[in-house]
Image (cartoon, rainbow, N blue to C red; front, side, top):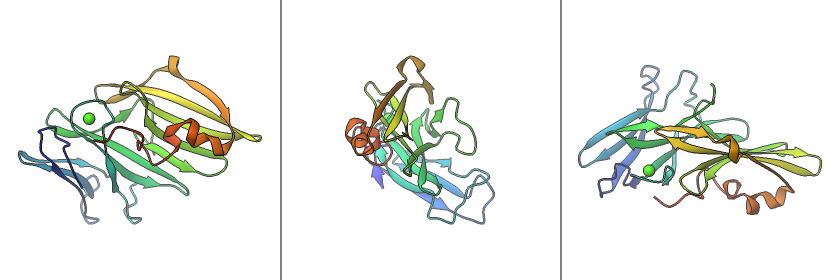
Length: 191
Ligand SMILES: [Ca+2]
């Protein structure tokens, strides 16, 4: 995959390398190679399952509102939910965006998908904010909870005053709430 992650005006090469025989922490790495050098970030946590075609590059988008393109990586999969991480280039290196209040085993991961009982989604809101949303079946409709996070350095910090809850029928959710309309961050600006 190619894009200007380092924000130096030229396209960088973005790729993942997996070596199942390497030490934990080094078995899966994200690389960004620019004219000026190569940066890496670990995609490997202790219980990472490398056997399902993951981690995998999911795309480049402008998520934090500035600098280079941001890298979306599908990191883990549940029964019907994918978990993505976001990596930004800052201070000369690749860093995984952290999510305030998130906990292992899905620490700093954005859930997407689900079944008829519950759906999860993540996407962009105005002013470089990020929405992390869930839709939970309640009778014939779904309760949609949308939480807004803003970047504070490399950490997404929740803004409780912007929490919002609405109810919709399932088929109306993607039209009403764009973060549910496609893969994680697909409503964010093209990088
Ligand atoms: Ca950026």
